[in-house]
Image (tube, rainbow, N blue to C red):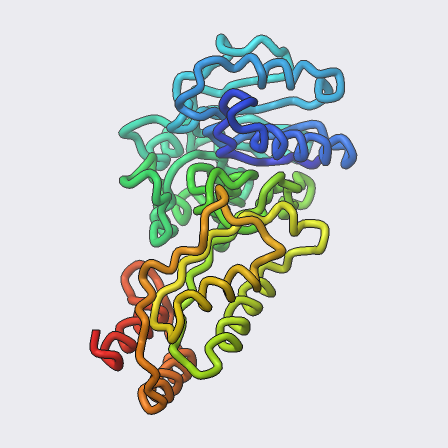
Length: 355
């Protein structure tokens, strides 16, 4: 049996964010083609600004999707939804910790809806006598302590945490969580990620997960979303061949996107450039030239407000170039506790050019 799993759609009125419904419908249409009929939504199906769920209700009543069973746990953005909020009979909203099985394999699914001021460990403990090691799957909504180096930047604080100790003690076969919008897979713990980028901070292709109950395996499946966001930061050096240097920087980033030709129209980009240039006007023209096949997010311009104009000094230019190459070769692990390479390079340029 195949089960689709997603979360963090943050549905509002369709007219406000039709792309979020588009992403959900893409998942449901994939399920129809794949002949799977069960989907789990790991919290924040709705945005906190939404109090009327009629559009989602009607979507689930659509003849095409009535064969699909929806299991929904509330997240921190929709903690008050319940079965009383919905009329479609193929929707079940699980508002209290609950164990379910879906086929004859005996594999159990523990659903943990978000509860303020609680931990997942507390709820697991209350049902642990029914959970045999490696024979159950956790579906929850909150923060995994091991993954907290990359918390949700829009929601500071800790939300219904799951600790590494909890995972080691109770031994779920897999853990699938909502709340963090960036997809992440570390050992047994998976953040499914939002299936539609909510804004420019949620970059790259989006996904949902397919859980195979017979083999207890997880597959990642791309969502054909309406928009694909990318946010790029570039440091420019005041070189004689500055245009060629910038072209190489831009082309390397576009290559990392791995965008297909038919996806270019979906791309929305935000570009910020820092550093030093010999000609700020030409810099702006070059950026626009090499990103001409893509649309800027909300029709904004590239941000070059932190670019200073440097005087033409070949010796300093060569020093900057060599320092840049040396920094790039550093074996350097960037995280929240460490300065990243771009920040190091920018500070080095300030020293070289006396800013």
